[in-house]
Amino acid sequence: MLKVSRRSLLKSAAGFVAAGSLLKSPAVLAQAAPLKLKFGNDLPATHTVNVRLKEALEAIDAETKGQLAISLFPNNQLGSDTDMMSQLRSGALELATMPSTVLSTLIPAASLTGVGFAFTSYDKVWAAMDGDVGKFIRTAIEKVGLVPFEAMWDNGFRQITSSTHPISSPDDLKNFKIRVPVVPLWVALFSAFGAAPVSIPLNEAYSALQTKIADGQENPLALIESAKFYEVQKYCSLTNHSWDGFWLLSSARIWKTVPKDLQEVMQKHFNAAAKKQRDDIVQANAEYRKNLESKGLTFNPTKAEDFQAALAKTSFYKDAKAKFGDEAWTLLQKYAGNIG
Image (tube, rainbow, N blue to C red; front, side, top):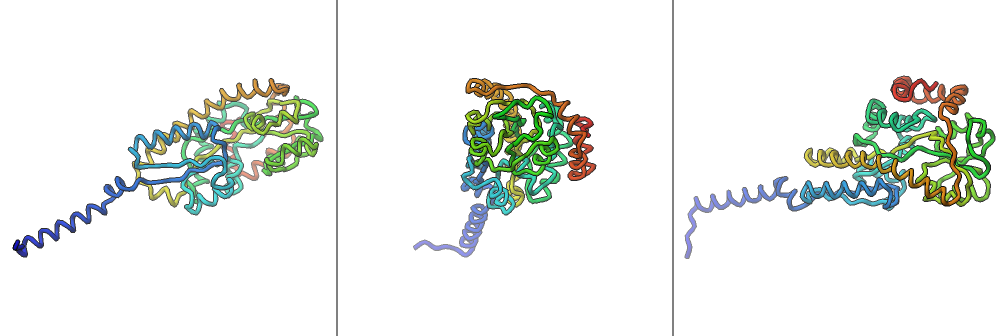
């Protein structure tokens, strides 16, 4: 019969304790159980944002050797933008992209980028969003339990379509029945021009145009094509009247539990993907225009300075400045110029 001394028994017990501690160490647990995160948005899987996100997620998986697994749920699979924003704040959802317009319902400063005819080119947009305007809005986002990534994604400049006449000058908007999203800033914008804006949800916009509840609408070219507005519209005026982008956001509750090294990997790949997606939109817009022209939509250019000057004669910019505050307005004009 094998005899075990008291000293041997104590040494063995100590070994088991050490082994138990090792099994519970973060490093070993990390190897055994990868960190799994969900990523949701409202965009089709084929949208440039999701194409570049998919590449970023693959790069993150490769660099972390499978220790960070992020699953993408496009096309409102996890709910509407409003639903996902609530989920982000509660920690039920870890990551999402959110349009500025939607985010502005919670954080008014987020719609600063959509002020009418503020940004007249991408040079101004990215200088502002990669500079002080972006920093100002990120600070506001952080105050509501969300963590914004540094690089913003592109949703594109918005253009006006019409079934009655091209919008070549500010006067062409007078009494023009235009469908707009349920966004107060854009209702105020078109009202200032003497138009008759009608706030209608996107899923009802096509029928509103078809039945002449509205004579026109405004959206980026990508959406004009995907929503098939060319079937019920004749003209597309390249007004670039407003720009909108997507913020990539994390739940602050979840983010603080993610190890620092994994945070850095995510930031690196997501920010790089955003920069690539910006280039995608510029190239895609040229293709969208060709496709839309082939389907019968007639395009016309406009002069942004004419619309900006007409808007400056109204109270629009003064009201916007009062809404956003002096600090935000000063930062906006640093990149947009003196817009009123």
